[in-house]
Length: 183
Image 1: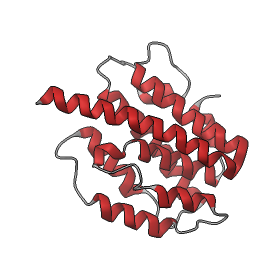
Image 2: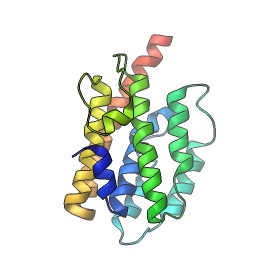
Image 3: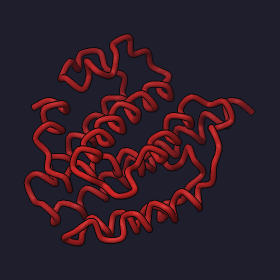
């Protein structure tokens, strides 16, 4: 099943986790640490929205403002954070998760030194031939998160967070390598 189809079938918790996972994997671009979005993950484990709004406000405060100093990848990550709904309704969460999916794939495409001439929309629809390694890994992670939540509900949050943590480490290494290359 394509990523677009999985997003179309996901419930509210799955969508919120999908958007949050995309944002969480891109936190290194915003200077955030591994724990900055934990309150948002915890709110998804609760039956309602929990303290989503409070956790979001804290994350925005800790990550501060800015546009990524002219870096397109950081600007895209900032937009994911800024667009997160404070009081998530199903329609808002669906739009946010979809936008985060596109932005995260685009970020990985920007950071991957390998060429990927096909647009991210085609990748999300299942066209995977010739995909660059970093984009392919991000696409797999997005699909895995949605499948975990669809198959296990709230019980899929912990393994989804583990998938997210792995992706964050990869992106952090890419960002570090990129910074050394610029120096």
